[in-house]
Amino acid sequence: MVKRLTKVKKTAPATLEEAFAQFINWKKANNLSEQTILDYTTHFNLLLKRFPSSTQSYEELEKALFKHLGQEGIKPATYNNRLVCLRSFFKWCVEHAILSDNPLEGFKKRKDEGRVVQIDEKVLSDLIRLPDLTTYVGLRDYALILIFLDTGIRPKEAFGLMESDYNKYALELTVQAQKAKTRTSRTLHIMPQTAKAIDELISVRPEEWKDAPLFCTNEGKPLNRHTWGDRIEMYCKKLGTQFHPYALRHAFSIMFLRGKGNAFALQMMLGHVDMTMTKRYVRLTNNDLKEQHSIASPLNQILPQKKRIRKIDK
Image (cartoon, rainbow, N blue to C red; front, side, top):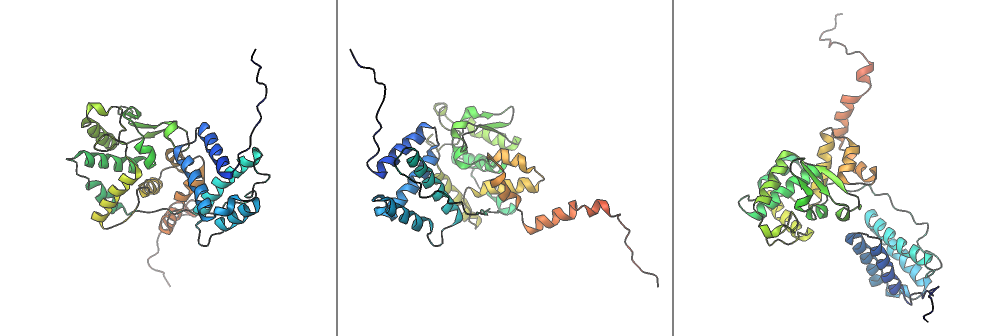
């Protein structure tokens, strides 16, 4: 008769590397995105690469972390990414009795104002005219550019869209939860011009591409940020300018607000979990603020509008 297994004795990982491998498997089981898993792995491997002795003892680990986060010239965004990923791992280690203390407990994020890239409207207008619409790649690029400027979708989310995510009658695109950065699905509304570009792209796709992403390569394979980055770089050279693909998301956000769009609506469209990230786009230029002030100042309503006096009688 086989004995019933009532209790399993846990065996602690022998090394920090083994602990990290278990941590990653735990994160994958919790359905974290591939990008998040990659972020954890990248930051942990960078720490070990810079400080190989950091795994020898808690003291060495603590010393290495302080130097790693105190690196001269480190940008707030980089600091915050390192802190969040490593602190989360060490918290897990404490919860599983691998470490007695979290060496990053009490560390706070640094204030990051963010870098919003603004693209001149003339440049955007010229960009839309560049793709060669007589080719599949040109049609794809044209439709993608319109989608970025019409919805502010993240590049990776756009590359994951399927034909089934497009509703031509409702003029909508659906970002499925498993492909959204925040793991929350959302519906994006598009203009008829964007829908027309998508329809034209779909019309030239071979029948066997039904299971391929909506915006794929000319071989029916998934598009990635490197390939798209090369395409944008090529267009930038023709325009005599330079910006990265994500700047189109910035352009959408800024122009949406300048067009009197609501900031809370923008937050939902961008897929931000709260207003923290969206506020970066709300901080407009001085000219925008000056114009808004002249239009919305309470004095326009409180003080009577006086007629202009052209000449004063003495």
